[in-house]
Image (tube, rainbow, N blue to C red; front, side, top):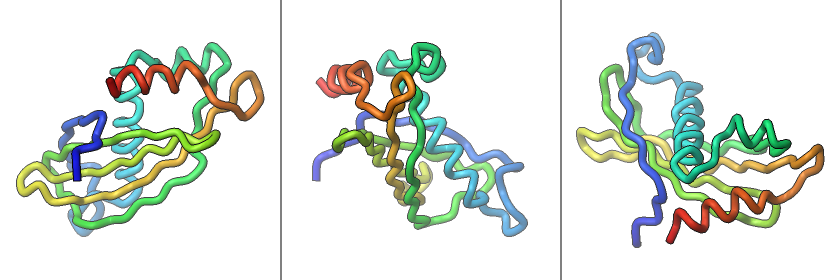
Length: 135
């Protein structure tokens, strides 16, 4: 299968992100995934705050995460994603790999939507930026 990832972001686990068992708390992975999405948008020329200021509110509608391997304090990892549009939804396929052994730790699908000037809709600005980044 070909590499479909459009964006990658390397990060490192911090001590305070771990639970009593010494592994990353399950809720922290959502922060990693969200940070990756925001950095991706910035990389393709879309600023989350600027979109909001222009009346385009992007929001998460659904989160599906499969936990495969635990990350521990100090682990370096790479958060990867690609995005597709499906009707009025934008689906972010996001995976996290531990750098030391390239093990898949998280497999996620984040479903987002946009509300434009108060109405659920499709943002041509987002779609065009994503298409340009894929070429």
